[in-house]
Structures are given as C-alpha cells and as structure tokens.
Length: 212
Image 1: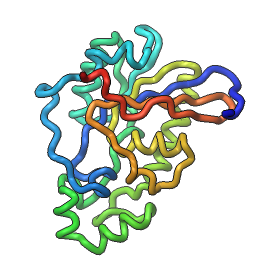
Image 2: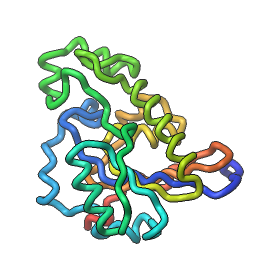
Image 3: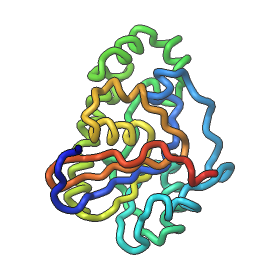
C-alpha cells in the first residue's frame, strides 16, 4: 500500500524530449542517430490531449528557452489552446566543451574526463558546464516553484532528456546513476504527480502511443 495522500495531486507532465548529441542515454548506450527536424516527424500534441488528460482552459504550459523546444511547445499549445511561457530552470544540462559532440567523439577527445564523469555525478564535463548533481539541484528548485505556483493544476512541460529523467529520478528517490538506466524516446510523454504532503508518484514514463 502506498503512502497516504493529502489534498489534490499536482501533475507535471513533460512530454516531448529532443535529444542533444550527448545525453545520459547516449553516455551509457552510445550516441543515437540525429533526430530529424520536427517537420519531418509527427508533432506532439496532435494526438496527445486525450492521452495526457489536460483540461483545455486550465493548465499552464511551460517550455525551456531553446528554438527546438519552442517549435514543439508552439505546436502543442496551438492544439490545446494554451499559453506558452519560458521557464529557465527547464533547460538541458550544460555539457561544456562536449556540446554538439557524440559520445564516441567525447570518448576519443576527452577519455579521462569522460571516465570520471560517468563514475561521479558531481563531476563536470570538460571545460565546465553542469554535473548531474548540479542539474538535479536546479530541477528540484524548478519543481518546487511550479508545484507551489500551480497547486492542484496540471502543468505541461516541453523540455529535454536530462530534465525529464531528473524529474522522474527525484520523484522515485532513485540514485543519480538511474539516469543512465532510463530510456526516453523523442516526443514521448512522462507524468509525475505531486501531493501536498510532499509525496510524489510516477504515473507515466516514455509513453509514445500518441505517435502511432
């Protein structure tokens, strides 16, 4: 039996990740092929409203300030009749000198730094950037801000792989290493419910049924 719940759940639903060349998934499973431009694949939101159960006029709609997520967020917002706002805390992890490189390229150019990074969640990428511990701190602060601001409402987040995995990791109370053991597909939907007593539950993870 799960923990007792008090009050109405506050849901954060981050649906459509777009992969950077280097992500926790790629770091553990090698680099994935580049994702095609958004107009070459199904857009999220075209079939996702019923899947995620978002009221048309109630939820707030957040997305991080990068062009590739702005296009996705605009498509979803247009479909669901939502307003789009920027939340800086939802940005992808800063991979420092590794930005734009594949896992194989990082391994070839910075083998020692990569080995350290894979073994220590507090280690930063070459040239600075964020460790996964830094990202977790940022995402936890963003989570607290959003759940306080939109208590009792459903919030649709359009963000990247690492923030979505971190929301799930924190909800589960899982160790940082769990980021390397999660698989996220492009334009997938994940959902986490937050409760007034501080508990959280992962209700959906990596759902792509709306793309079929």
